[in-house]
Length: 477
Image (cartoon, rainbow, N blue to C red):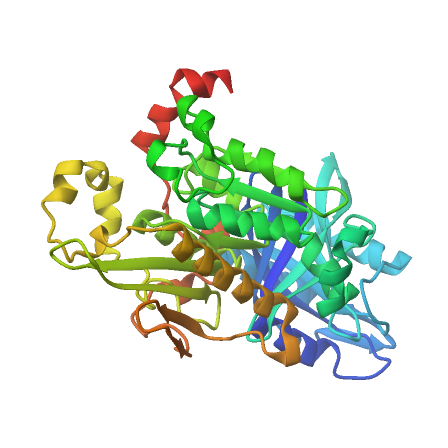
């Protein structure tokens, strides 16, 4: 297991205002964190700050806390069913190491924090530039606790996605000549940040395959492909890299795409993780939690519901896109529209923006959306019948989604939110909406940074995915 930390920009700002309020004076506080457990990575999601009151800390250039303040933090963590995070500042910038006093303080807290909350102590240090370093103190033997450094600390919110990396665990990549033009556009530092992000593409169909190809070409080092489906004949007019042999041999879309991406990838060390599960299944869901950014390239409501939950409860921004095609009664094109949008704290969720209808989630869970009879009996103008697609539409939507991600991470001119983009093919017009946050009755903001403790059991069995995994071609894989 690797480790990471995530927090919203609102929590980040409050912590920095307290910890960095005095020049050349360290400071301390506590917070509560909740686990987000992926397949290969555990993330600590920081929330619920506990600032010191009079007599809770001693400031003498360095800073220390009283036992009473620590006890208050333990009580609050137990009340909120989370772990204890101990945070302090250092008078230098960037990722911070630890002094002997730092190690002694945190190791002394680790045993009691574990005993009371059942979770490791999280230690975090803020540099003067607002960069974070972090470690989790795990029990390695009776009475023995050792730190495990986190690979990164992610801050997501109004200023986009900002990540501080532990260079000794995730070193800045050395770039090949192929990336010279790419680096010249937004610079080496931003390219290093982009390249080290772990990016997941959920749905390896027409849009997802184009998104993944773009990511591989622009130097991303690790891409996870999450999709259970196989290549079918009707996919061949719009599924990048898929050919007739893939259809005849019933190959998995993620396998075909992962193999092809390695040919065109420009990163020096490129990894394509093929995850042959639906994101609505536990295995696919946990694979998605390993990522720093997710692309939603699915056209079903259950998958979007899961990704919506991940965006808020697990603090992983989701770049979503969808295509709606309208036909006349004579099956002629009347209209085609596609939308690109980022779901993340401080932004409107996928349900509030209209990308899926929660009423259809249960229909899909019950298998009705895989029943041809049920779909055929729906009215011709029903939303579930508007997912016809062609390659030119997919390519334009994929481009918009990647550009949304670049705005989120690169933030040129400080602009990280370019709004919800709606393109209308027939008129050629682009509408841009800045929709603000969710409606007051939306439940998703209440899940922010709750992770696995949000209380929502969203995954379940996927009969079609299980059927494919029982097939001969899957067993041969």
